[in-house]
Each structure stands twice: as C-alpha cells, then as structure tokens.
Image (cartoon, rainbow, N blue to C red):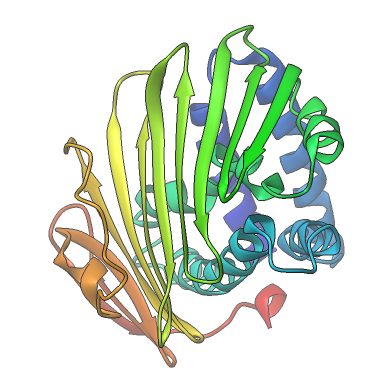
Amino acid sequence: MKRALSIFLIALMIATLFTGCTKAKDAAESAVQDAVSQAVSGAENVDEAVESAAQSVADDDTASTFISAYMDAKSEVVNKILDGLTTNPDTVMTAMSFLGISMSDLYILPAMYFGLGETSVSTALAFMGAKDVVYDESGNTYTITYTNSDDQQATMTGTYDSGKSIVCTGTVNGTENVYTEIFRTSFGYVGQFYVIADDGTITVYLIAIDGEDGSVGILTGTDRPASLTGSESADFPKSASEWYAIEGSTITGVDSDGNALSFEYVPSDDND
C-alpha cells in the first residue's frame, strides 16, 4: 500500500505533464491505474518491467544500451529517495516537487531506441501515438523525426560517444523543449536534464549516481545550463537550492522552501 501511495502521487504528476495531450494522457492514466492495482496486489514493480523490456532490445554497445543502463541506475536511486520521502510523515508533500525527475525519462523515450534501426523505432513510437516516423543514423549521431499524438512535428537528436557520454536534444514544432546530457564517470554517472513544459515553466535536474547512492538537484526558472564536462563530483547536484540525496541509509536534502532534511531511510514493505 505504501508503494501505491507513491504511484498515486506519480499519477498526479503524469496528469500535469500530459495536460492537453489526450491520447498520451489517457495512456498514462491507464498505465498508472494498472500500476496501482499491481502495487496493491503485490505484483512486480512496474519499473522493473519497463527496464527489463528496454534491456531486452539492447544488449551491445549502442546508444540505447548506454541510456538504458543509466536509467536503470538512476531509477534505483530515485525510487529509494521517493520511497523515503513518501513514507516519512514529515516529507510526504515534499515528494511532489521530486516527482518530475521520475517522469523525465518519458521526455527522452525516443532516444532509448538510438542505434536499433528504423523498424524498432517506428514500432516503439507507434505505442506513443506517433506517426510518420523517420529515423536517421550517421556515424555516432542519431535523429528521429515524427508527428506526435497532438499532430505536432517533433524531433529527438543525439550524439553518442561510445561508452562515455550521450547528449540529446528534443524539439516540438522547431522549438527546443528538452536537453539532456549523461556521462559515465569513475564512480557512476553524472547528468542533467533541462525541460520546458507546455506552460513555459523551465526545470533543470542535476543528477549524480554513485553505486547505490546518489543525489538530485532541482533548479526552476533558469536558463539552459552550461554543458557538463564529465568530471563533476558526486556531490555536484547539491549546488542547487533544492536537492535530495541518499547515502547508505540516510536521506538528506533541502526542500523547495529551504528547509533542511535528514532522516534514516527505512524501506517500505513494497520496496524491500
């Protein structure tokens, strides 16, 4: 039931993200309803199913494999922090501002198919309501163009430095709305995700994954960030005014109101 609470909160964020996109919103809400049912009945975590499906189509050195590995590592850390925030009575509402990072993977979903060929890309994006999909691969640069479920022209481009980094940019009707960078480091990964929502709100997420530990920084109303170098420390997200981290069994952070957080993480029954 505690996981059901987390998924319910995510459902609220999904509804916000997909306002004005009927097909995508309906699909997202249906997926959340299924997720809640699974959580209550003790079924497998939805995240595990998604990650398993992504890994099954990418088992070699492709951009897809790189992104999937990063998402898997990030999900482990993000899920623990979110579980901690939603099951700690003092931080339940704080979790609302953290949920955007859980949903960020939806924005770069097309990039998960870089390197897998046009057939795989077209089949995958069809489930998102996309049509007129065109896939181009030139060396280590990938471009996917398509008409999204709102009949808008969308693109996702990416440049992959084998085993080291990937940089992706997304546009809608020619206007950039997504920018993300991921670097593999000596301790794990660093990354940043920049998104402009439909209402013009700008959010930047700074991410560092250090094994089973990690941190997420949140910036709002800012310009597109400077590019990462890949040499950032595991603590670099803590430079943001709002951030959350887990180290061992301790969750720390500073919430959107500037309040410091520090408590011991006790996994919920559904997150063991």
